Amino acid sequence: MSTEKQSATPIKQPVTVSVTLEEPIVRGGETIETLVIRRPRAGELRGLSLTEVANMKTDAMVDLLPRITQPSLLKHEVEAMGPADFISCAMEVATFLAPQALVAGVSKT
Image (tube, rainbow, N blue to C red):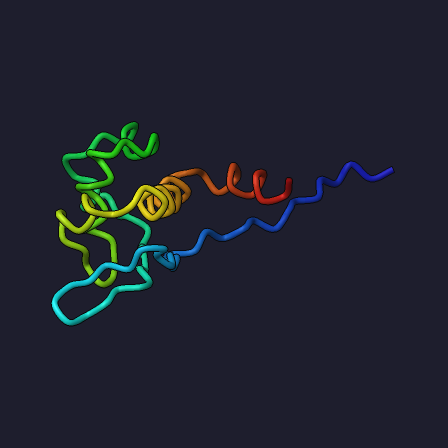
């Protein structure tokens, strides 16, 4: 009888995710239809409460998203986002903060 433990292959969280906006952002002559959101680093979380970011609090996300989006959004552009687009972006950010084991458990169900 073997007492060997089988270890699951960890699911790697991506460094970036793309979010297609339901309501594109118009900036000058440019239309932004897709945002790339990058996993935040400690410096980009500076001055923010991790609890508020993890709970997707609006004020925290309005401050954080311009720091981690490509193209870089302006604060007033984040504030003008529709609820569906804002929540889509906030959910991706919150997922970045979750431990990999938790994300792996959720993706299995």
